Image 1: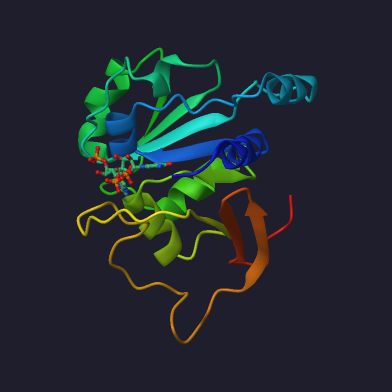
Image 2: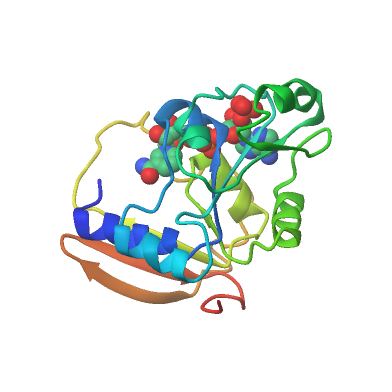
Length: 202
Ligand SMILES: NC(=O)c1ccc[n+]([C@@H]2O[C@H](COP(=O)([O-])OP(=O)(O)OC[C@H]3O[C@@H](n4cnc5c(N)ncnc54)[C@H](OP(=O)(O)O)[C@@H]3O)[C@@H](O)[C@H]2O)c1
């Protein structure tokens, strides 16, 4: 739905992040590599003493993740899987050399995931979806910034995926999210919302 210039902007966001998080369904359905695409940006990261691409992070209750998914096989950066206890015991050995499986307790609370990532040195986490993950980050008030891109097209399918699902959002009719920037990128528009006092800090 986006355009090349915006994909490149997203690549720059990836390169500026310490870690990228997606839900397990996105790993299963899209098989994303989640690497920085630009060779120049990868080199700049290496010059700063970093891996060419950020740490990859996912969360799962079921533990239903394929060790051969591109999430695990592409790139040398660390891969972290936060898994509910019930599945963690079997998932750990299955992903053994490809990822670190963190037993996140009976259910995975994203607040605790963020705390653990912070303890591991992650200061800037980029959350790339899908909707189940976006809903939890936003309803739990964990996001510092929201980037929304509006594309000039209609999907025309009431069953199509939504950005977020049902939930009690801290940003609602009584408390509107502060709009920090509007930027035209070719035929799409980027809207940046400041969701916490940490917006704009590195
Ligand atoms: N266009 C884009 O750029 C883009 C980006 C991202 C995603 N997407 C689309 O979004 C779709 C997936 O979205 P989605 O909302 O269905 O799924 P999702 O958010 O990618 O992943 C949901 C899954 O993540 C795990 N999960 C999420 N929260 C959890 C928690 N608190 N504790 C434990 N596990 C948790 C569960 O995995 P288990 O089922 O393993 O327990 C859950 O089923 C993809 O098919 C993709 O096409 C598009």
